[in-house]
Amino acid sequence: MTVESALPLVPIIIVIITTILIFLSGKRPNLREFWSVAGSILTFISVAIMVPMIFNNQKIVYTLSTIAPGISLNFRVDALSLIFGIVSSFLWIFATFYNIGYMRSLDEHAQTRYYTCFAVAILGAQGVSYSGSLFSLYLFYEIITIFTYPLVAHHQDEEGYAGAKKYIVYLMGTSKGLLLPATVLTYVFTGTLDFADNITSGIFTKGTDGVWITVTYGLFIFGFAKAAIMPLHNWLPSAMVAPTPVSALLHAVAVVKAGVFCISRVMLSVFGLELLQALNLGLCTAYLVSFTILVASIIALTKDDLKARLAYSTVSQLSYIVLGVALLDPTGVLGGIIHIVNHGFSKITLFFCAGAIYVATRKKKISDMAGIGYAMPFTMGAFAIASLSMIGVPPVAGFVSKWYLLNGAMSIHNLPIVLVLMASTLLNAGYFAPITIKAFFQGRKEKWTAADIKEAPVTMVVPIVLAALISVVLGIFPQFFSQLIGRLMP
Image: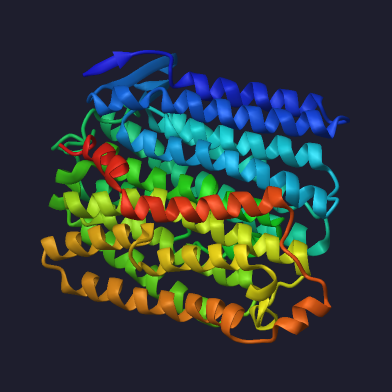
């Protein structure tokens, strides 16, 4: 059942108002931070209001403007929309409190610009979530790219500008050179940019040339470079020069999640399961991202810088989401989409931990962290829990994702994908477990006591611990999101 309502605009309007208030409160830091907190909470509430409607098998649609026949600035909320909308709005609350502790502890400059751009990035994520057409999706996708550039370049030093330059060249280059042509081709072949009403049929007609469909599909897959599928992944590790909360925004909340969300949306709502199956595009995509899953994990093993290791972990873990959808099996699709949630909470925990370690110790290298668990037990305990999720150990959330993915691969009798998932799990353990072992079972307590090293500020530690605990809750009680995603299935 389709319901016409302006509800999808409410969270977007709230974020716009929040952004303006943050910008106008530049000389009053307490007020600026208050608007950030209030805006994030209100945004999440406005998203949560739509949950009962989706559980009642309703879809919310709203057209703001029609530019040309088949091209509209319109919005829709279904199960897939709500998944990304909930994750980005809820994690914004965590990131806001963490930002306050981080930015104040390091006495960072240009904080008004920082908070403003952070809010606009969330605006882009919310817009991407509820886009009802490729036109709307492209618009908000570019908003995220443009306004995260100042965040990556925040430190305004040579390293920061170099990382930001690579970031903008990769993402703007692919969006203009690949994504925009794919969107134009879609309009030429179908006469519309609106998403299909169901994920089975898509919007392409049966008479469309399969070669051109394949070309268009390939342009979309690589055009959404925020998904960091190899070889268009290198911007992501380079962007780690940004402040750690920005890294969390990039990896867990808005940027890369927008990439994999967009790919999932295009696969399901533009091409559809039947067409992808008929042209064998699903399986080709699954093998493509399997390469990314394995190679990025191997590279992560070689990194001593904690954020760099986490960055390559993200490159690998993002491809689980695309892999699940590409299996074109209901269980696999469920595993891929639910990983948007599970990876979000676990990865934001890991990056928050990295930031807390830097604030408390100024250390970035894993080799320098022997025994740090004695000085920062809450931070490293949360890191251990989130690591278990990334590995896929029950009862933490990542186990649920991998369980569904494995079942999806076995449902289509694809042994190579099963082996990829098993091998990647071993690689995950190989680059995460040594960090926890080093923190709690190596080094001496006296080293940290003598240096008077303690936990980071409470505004940083509380979001870390809560995010880690939520990962456990999602692992034990996955029903809410699995049932929500079930509303998407035909």
